[in-house]
Length: 308
Image (cartoon, rainbow, N blue to C red; front, side):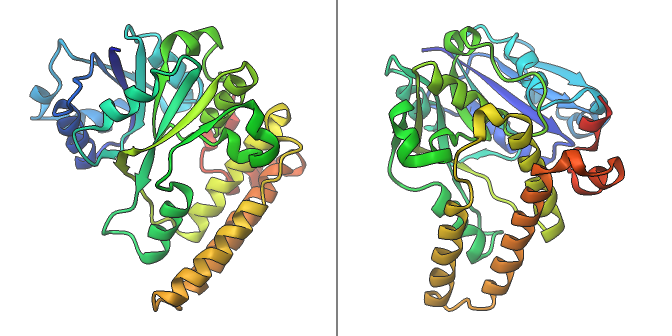
């Protein structure tokens, strides 16, 4: 099965160039590498003197203005350039851990009913023990296949699917109408819900590995979760009626025990402050319609979304 690659970039740095080089070394060579970049100036600055890395026959680069970027619409635009049976969607900070990433994800699409499959995300040495635990908590070592029959048992986790690194069947994606055209966040889970409701399955493949982790400040975490809450409020048909807090409570309890056992008790303070920021941001996002425009701009991480 041929696979094209889509990478979304914004102010890309050296990690992006590393990702490009690693994609070239994959056991299954990508068809096209389609780069959807926001803000042309920063991209041009990075690529000055390194243009030879983007061979004309393999790469397609297009730019969108910041004011026109949308998590769903921009990705849909990139998919219009896909000609392969499947496409691997990535963000610029997702770095393949080995040369088998595309191969391990592509294998999961052999199942006829699989619409999308996502990779395991690993922390790096730059991350502390807490972030490493959170990555391992959210991205375990066991493969998963999630379908409509799992909704009652798994709740919102049934639709979890991160397109930080996820492979999609092109035919099914187009059949389902792609991502929602307008969303501040969560386009991947909204699509996953649509796919599951249509009778397809979502796969998680832990053998497909990328390095991807953040060291968010508490304020950045609040903003991120505010946008998460907004997406839940704007798409109640996807998220309403599903428990969202039990998994977070489970993670906090497990992380506390892990940090104590590993001699990192001071990180428990960070854990609770981070959890509070997440919870507060999410709850504010859920009731964004009652907030003033000034407060929305204070809390969101994507102010351009609110200019439409």
